[in-house]
Amino acid sequence: MYLGLDLGTSGVKAMLIDGDQTIIGSANGSLDVSRPHSGWSEQEPSHWVRATEEAVAGLKAKHPKELAAVKGIGLSGQMHGATLIDAADKVLRPCILWNDTRSHVEAAVLDADPRFRALTGNIVFPGFTAPKLAWVEKHEPDVFARIAKVLLPKDYLRLWLTGDYVSEMSDSAGTSWLDTGKRAWSSDLLAATHLSREQMPALVEGTEQAGTLRPELAAQWGISCNVVVAGGAGDNAASACGMGTVSDGAAFVSLGTSGVLFAANGSYLPKPESAVHAFCHALPNTWHQMGVILSATDALNWHSGVTGKSAADLTGELGETLKAPTGVTFLPYLSGERTPHNDAVIRGAFIGLEHESSRVVLTQAVLEGVAFAIRDNLEALRSAGTGISRVTAIGGGSRSHYWLASIATALGVPVDLPADGDFGAAFGAARLGLIAASGADPIAVCTPPVTSGTIEPVSGLSAAYEDAYRRYRALYPAIKSLAH
Image 1 (cartoon, rainbow, N blue to C red):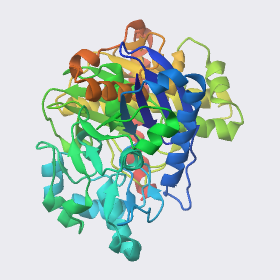
Image 2: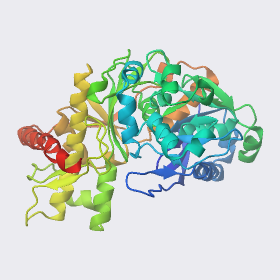
Image 3: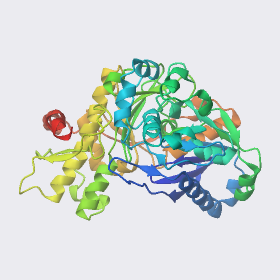
Image 4: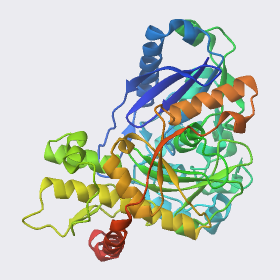
């Protein structure tokens, strides 16, 4: 048996698979996000441990014998978070999360240093880890002076699981400290933020062994000792392993809290000016590109909170048949935007409202706004040399047929639906645990799921969608001056 642990923003998911990759069971532990100031987003690392314990306890209650047979554990996690610990492994402050934009000034300063784009292949985004440390040095110097290690969220879980300071390439590529082509920490980039290699964890590939489960935890969970913990992956790379998106040209779209358009690459293809992320993949000698929007299902959940209707009820009111855009446009920049704008200050908007703009019209605009934001990502990936002929849909938002039809039509490519099953980050993490523990071939393990169906672009609405997308594209420069 193999265990995948996925540390997300809203919870920890634990998934158990067997040697044939059949899912035995899964369980969850819940998490909340603290937003003490505008643009801030934090979590207490102790809550990650508590949520992991909840999730594993849920598995143990249902599958004690299977859990006892675990030989490998894989980790996946939300990327970019700055988890700061002292020499005694004590957490110095709440973790600053991926969607925290407080360090936009510091990010701009680092991004102006040409070494960062040259070595990392990426813009220094406010959500990345390095500018967060620059913010801490400036605003919390006492905390900065006590930092012994900087860990990404899943790697703090690893420290708890194994006692080891280890990270891997896919997650570390999102820090702005990794030489992404060489797959190694850059001493120059660390020095630019007054840090050293000694304050970083060791690096392994996601498929490699990165410690063993502590005996006391193994005993608590009813597992034998010598359980291998794999390097694992950042959440998007882990999802790609779960989806089998590991070969050059394979792609998926993820509709989670954030939205991701992800393409695997057989070589390193940076183009930072496009705001496309060029990161290491979880498999050796493999990279990937992705465009990221900060609010995907988050935008629908916001709309749900305002209207008092559940997200499922809101999308249900639209029916199954895709409608032509109404002229109401929604910009989903509720907490800024990453690809393609790299703008932490921009905020969302409804444009084109009139008396007849009902709740259903606004829901349609929210779904279309996210679809057009993902289309922005597709155009950015194309400009960086990656062609996409079809995508597979994952994430909570992919349960809406209407939303997927909107995305297929906005992108102009078919959207494949995986057969029933969970092929997300927890499954990908479990696969990495299997590879690390058994030495299996990564490509042979990370196969794509069977496709249960395909949603084609609605050709009769292509022209209307192109017109609506052009309106959408024109609005960002029009409102930018109001936000800045």
